[in-house]
Image (cartoon, rainbow, N blue to C red; front, side, top):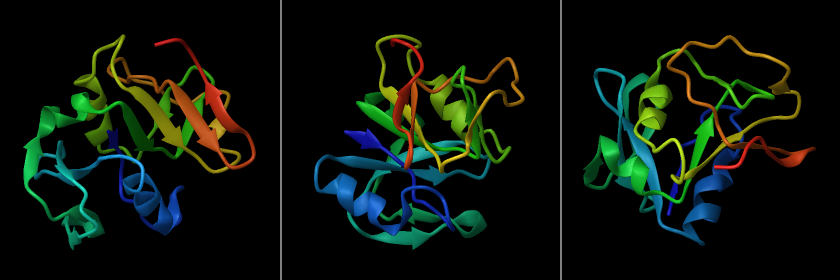
Length: 147
């Protein structure tokens, strides 16, 4: 099972990401809650308009903890540094979701990036949880640390 996101604009993954994932695995997608937290629902090829111009799965919601049942969690990022710290859009939604995952033995957390978005350092807060790996078009998979 893969917990993913719906790419918007020029985010990595593009319009073919969800179909490619769904052909291989069960896919969970986030639903943005009014407080900025993320709830999860199964992807069934139907997406509905959500807040802030996002697209969300139309199926039944599975709760905020459903992300912890995934084998892999794909997260969006503006940049990731070589420690695995992720820079998001500033809403804290993914920070809250990642905090629900066990620190060891949980899902593999991977950020999808464009080339040039794996950088030496990003600003970090004490609550930030690192990703385990990134995937870029030019560099492929870069793994930061054992889980």
